[in-house]
Length: 79
Image (cartoon, rainbow, N blue to C red; front, side, top):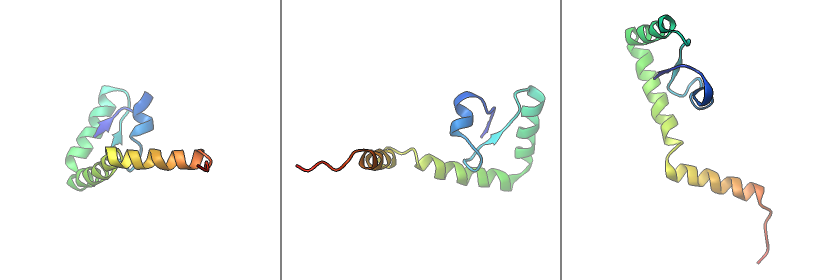
């Protein structure tokens, strides 16, 4: 993926997460895309990174993370 690092994109798609950041202009964006199209190894690596990152957003994984957060934030309440 090639994206312009603005607003939420920069927060969600950082380095090592299957994305290349491009400048916010047509020429710069095209240069990043062109370089990626010419480098099959980089495309494969981005694909691996993207799949691994996407798995962290799966509903089961998100539920585990949310549960762990609640457990850390809420004191143990005896019943």
